[in-house]
Amino acid sequence: MNYYGNMGGIKIWIIIANIFGIVSGVVGLIAFFAYMQLFIDNNTFNTIPIENYGIIAILGAITTFISMQTIIFGIYLINFLVKNSDEEISNNRYILAALSLTVGGIFTPFILARLRSENVVSTIAPRFSTSRAISLHSLIGGVTGLIVFFGIILGCTSKNGLNLSDLFNSNANEYVRIGSIVLISFLAGSSLYGLLSTLLFFQKNAYEKYNNKNSLMNFLGYLNAIVITFELIIMLIWSVIRIISLLIDIFANGRERGILFGMLNAIINLITIISIIFVMWIIVETIKGMWTRNNEATIVSFKRMEEMQNKRIGETSFSE
Image (cartoon, rainbow, N blue to C red; front, side):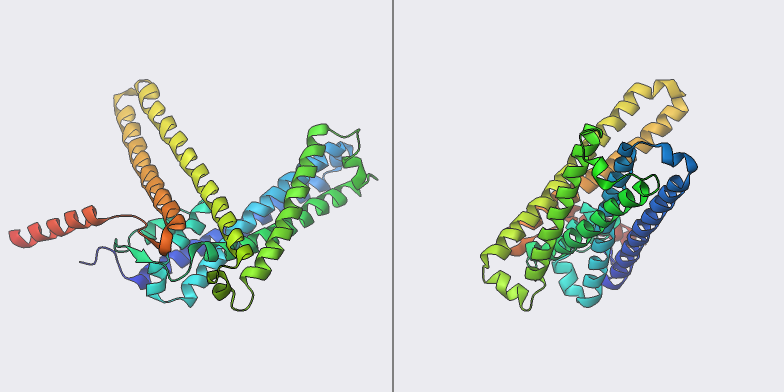
């Protein structure tokens, strides 16, 4: 029995999962802007103060930036799967897991974890590979975020004779004004950073130059790894918070639901906790893989599970 499945099936499932993520990102953007358009077309919109335009623009830009990360990382993962061999995919599994986890993808790391547990030596430096994906997102996400922000502001203010400068003068809400300035600065910085990083990591013979210890490329590689690690740590913290909330729900609200529903709720929560712990395990192994020396790492160990599976097979064969 091949407990870990074949690589062809694993690739298909990961591609399907990422196509679903891309479609979800696109649909989410379309739904958001369709709702905003209906809101803008409302006749009462002309009576809304300039601060509300800023809030809508900020929400639109942030939504765009986050959705572009899901879309770009999904496309990058699919392209990686299509162009590389089964061995390369297996050896670089924690790179794929890192990119998937940062956008909230759980299915891809779970499937990758079903590969045979063994020390793998990456054929691509993880900080180089992830830097290429981050470069594209920083550039495209930053530019599209700026376009959305100013597009919403200019489109809204043109309906009632206001100017863009009205959002930033002293009469505007201080929090919205500061928030707009911070967001514009972040998106502009992201665009410039993405442009520089893209030119470096997508240039001819980029990987050879990176391995030759190009100082700027290596610095950006470490910087991008820090960004991904920070996002993964945030996911770890959020996972711990979820586990605590589920435990509180079991012990605090169990009696109110009665014995039967209380036990059912406890079982469901315990299953959820186990799945969260599994995800946390993968996150920790992924972080270790991102920072390991000599590009060698094991994403997650299933040796004990494999031994139990083989033991069951042996017992079944003996009984027969």
